[in-house]
Length: 89
Image 1 (cartoon, rainbow, N blue to C red):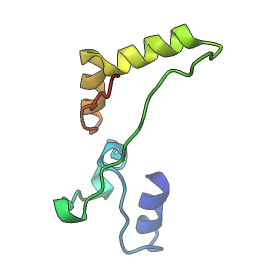
Image 2 (cartoon, rainbow, N blue to C red; image 1 turned 30 degrees about the vertical axis):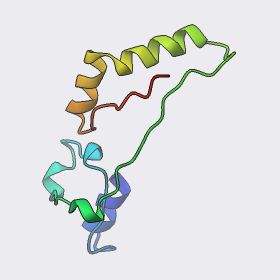
Image 3 (tube, rainbow, N blue to C red; image 1 turned 90 degrees about the vertical axis):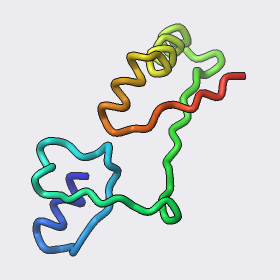
Image 4 (tube, rainbow, N blue to C red; image 1 turned 180 degrees about the horizontal axis):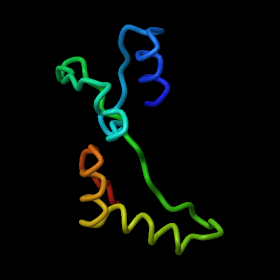
């Protein structure tokens, strides 16, 4: 985000596109949020999983559980991310 905003501020780019979740109070006054039509929009996906046999599997499971919890989802939403679509086997 910072590099995109910097390029636009310096006149090295006419415009730039970043994720809404990358918008921080520090750069908010320099950008304008435009909605992208559904037909042209791409939703990024960020898989999360615990590695089988990983050296810190208990900590990894605790982290995944936190992200998938109501509190974790609230934090993600506050940062402009969509809710998790859990695909639990």
